Amino acid sequence: MKKPDKTKTTIYDVARASGFSTATVSLVMNNDTRIKLSTQHTVMECVRKLNYSPSALARGLANQRTYNIGLIIPNLHNPVFAEMVEGVKNYLNNVGYNIIIEVTQQNLEMEKKYLRSVRNQKVDGLIVFPTFLNEIREDLIQIQSEKFPLIICGVRMDVESVPMNYVSSNIVEGAYLATESLIRKGHKKICLMSGEVNNQQSDERIKGYLQALKMYGIPHEEQFILRSSPDLNTVYQKCYEFIGKHPDVTAFFCLFDYIAMAVFKAIQQRGLRVPQDIAMIGYDDIELDLFMPVELSSVCTNNYKIGEISARIIYDLLQNPDAGVQQIVLPPLLIERESSG
Image 1 (cartoon, rainbow, N blue to C red):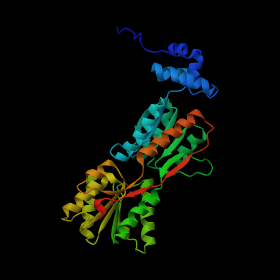
Image 2 (tube, rainbow, N blue to C red; image 1 turned 135 degrees about the vertical axis):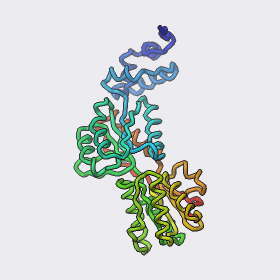
Image 3 (tube, rainbow, N blue to C red; image 1 turned 135 degrees about the horizontal axis):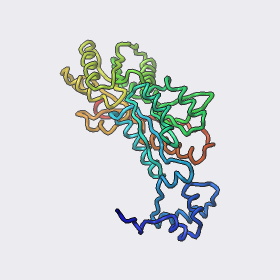
Image 4 (cartoon, one colour; image 1 turned 90 degrees about the horizontal axis):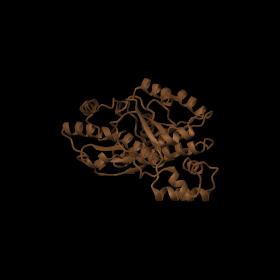
C-alpha cells in the first residue's frame, strides 16, 4: 500500500500560517462574500506561499457543488470548437473547475438529450454551442427560467420573456465584410459554400452575404448558394460539379474555414488557380488557414475569446446567482491574405 504523503499541505497548515480558523480558510477558498477583503488577502497569500490546492471533491462536499461545468458542442472536427473549448477550459481550470464535454455530432435528438440529461451528471453550470438553436429554444428557456447557470456560446439568442446569457461575434457583419471585399475586387459571380445543411450560424452568414449583394446591386442567384453536409468529400464533389456547371464563377465564400481545403481541391482539379482564376475567402480564421497551399483570407471571430468570456460569465453566475444577464457581441475582423487576390 502506498504511504500517505506527509509533506502535502493541508487546510490546517494554511490555518496555522494565516492565524485564522480552518472554517474561515474554507470560506475564503469557496469565495464566500461574507469574509472581509483583508482576511481574504491574508489567507490567499498563505495559500500561494504554501502551494495549497484543495481537491474538488472536498470543496464539493463542503458546499454542495461538483466543480464541474458541462459543455455541449456540435463536433470535434471543426477547429473552431476546439479553440472555443480551449478558452473555456483554460479559464475554468484556473479558477478550480473541471469541464465535462458532450458531442452531439450535429444531431438534433442528441442535442436535446444532452440538454435534458446533463444536469443529472452533476454539473454546476452549462455552456452550449448550439447547432439547432430554434429547435432547442424551449429547452434553453426552461433551463434559464430555473435559474440554472447557462450561457449560449457562438450565437445570439434573444427571448424577451426570459433574457438569455450569450457570447458571440457579429455573424451577419462578418459575412457582409467578406462578401464586400470580394465585390470590391471586381467579383460578381460569388458562390457561397455553406458546409452545413441546417445551422443558425450558416443562416446568419448567408444573410450577411445577401445584404452585401443587395447593397452593391448584384442580383442574387439561388443556385450560387451551395448547402452540403460538413463531410469534406461531399463539399469537394458539390464544388467540383458546380464549377463545371457554372464556369463563370470567379469567387468562393466558404462559411467555415475547415471546408476550404475541399473547395480549394475542387478548384485545382478543374485546372484553375487560386486566386488568379477563382478567389477564395473563409470564415473563422483558424490556424489551418496559414498552412493552405495558398494562405486563406478569412473573417476572425475571436473563437478563443468567445470561449474564455463564456467561462467567465458562468463563473460569475456561480459566485453571484443574482447577477444580471450578460449579452456580449464581439466585432469581427476581416484578415486579407493571398487567396482573395
